[in-house]
Length: 320
Image (cartoon, rainbow, N blue to C red; front, top):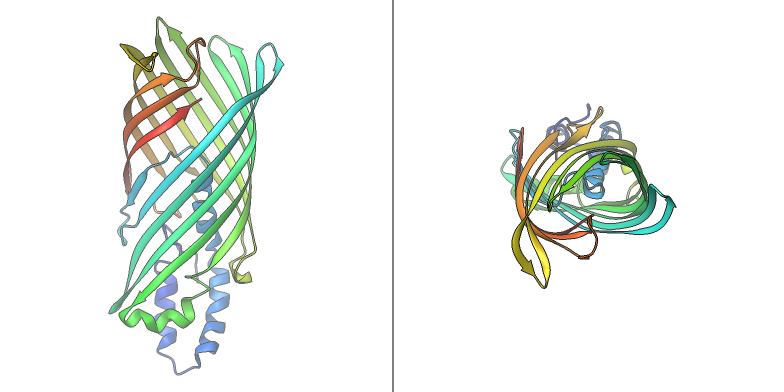
């Protein structure tokens, strides 16, 4: 069975069609499952599972609700992020080392039509990452920021069968649905940014690229084992200016921002979309008032769009 392309749920079409034909055969259920097992192993579904974990664990595509429309069942994705970073020590006069951690959660839901029935599938991905980030000031407003992060993640599926789809439960369960796995992630990345602050106005432009090595462990079935790589990039621009208002004694700025992010590499389209653009507005205030480039708390709203995807978010976040 070939790998299934453009699939948020990486089992959308080929596996269901194949197994429906199998069910019609007068063969014992266990024999059918044993026949189906190597087909799952050959389908390279791990590429889709790894990309889900990559989307959950890397911050290039921000927390938001996404709706996918690639001609299939129009699944949805919700992403939540809780990051934190802090300066650790000075490496030189022009460079500092930071430590950072992030807890992230992704949920994907999709209803699959199967003849006279349906399968309601929900994927959940949890990740906890931590690493080191160096900020190297190059001069003229440019900063280079290489980083290395390590993470552990969990991916599980919960599915409910309805109608004639219940006939598929003995074959799909623990191979395509209702299973779990853990995974390790190693992610080197680099960001190049330019920042200018002039009379209270701030302009920043940055580009970021990351590559993750993702390896599963503790699978509920060994046929689910995978070792994959996943790549992601992002571009972002922001413009902030003062409002002459204050919040708790701190200056309040308005900000507009835009970005573009996506996947690259051979498995870039397995989630049903390859890239997404973002435009947003917000209000922000510095956490520390006596620093020119202080960390900031931001309340923002943005709209995301791209080929086969759209989304939105209202967020309260820390900007570093």
